[in-house]
Image (cartoon, rainbow, N blue to C red; front, side, top):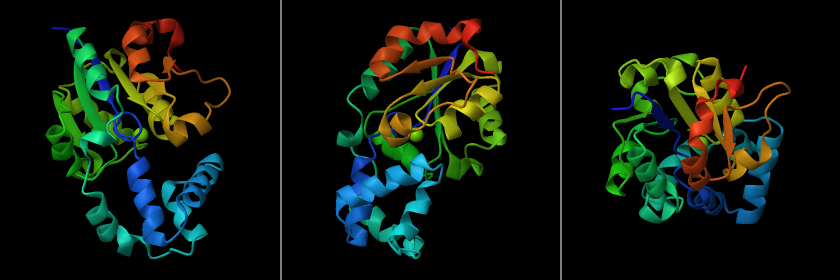
Length: 219
Ligand SMILES: [Mg+2]
C-alpha cells in the first residue's frame, strides 16, 4: 500500500458552504447578496469569518448559532461539490491513503459519512481540541494518520492562511484548491508557492503527481 497520504479540508474543498452562509443572511434579515459581499470584504482585508457579523450589528451571533444549525440541518448530499466523491474515489484508486481533517464541529464527521464521504482518517477540530492554523493541528493530523513523514502528506485546502501556509510550515505538500470565497480572493505572499495549485478536485486527480515534485515545495 502506498504510504502517500492526501489529507483534505472540508469547507469549500468537499462542501459548498453557500447554503449555510445564505441561512446566516436570512437569520440576520439581510439580503443574501449583501451578506455574502460583506463576507468577501472581510476575507479581502484578512479578517476571520466571524468579523462579518459586527458589520450587521449582530454581536450576538453566537446566540443565533442553534437557530442557524436547525435551519441548516447539517451537511446534505447536495452541499457536496460535484467532484467531491469522484475525487476521493479516484485518489483512492490511484493508491493514495485518504484523510479528512478540518476545522469543523465534531458532528460533521458523521454527517459526511451519511452522505457518502469516507476516508481512513476523519477528524474535526472540535473533537481534536485544536484548530487550523495552529501547528499542533497538523501534528495531530499526522499522528492520526499513524505518523507518516510530513513530506509524504499532501494537504488540500482552499485557504492560504489556514491551509496552504501552515501545512507547508508543517513540512507537508501544500495543495491550494482555488475555489470558494477564500480560494478566489486570497493570494499567496510573495515568495511562497504552494506545492500545487488547482481549480477543482477533478484537476487535482490529473495533477496530484506534481505535488510530490521537490522543486515546488513551498518555503
Ligand atoms: Mg476550507
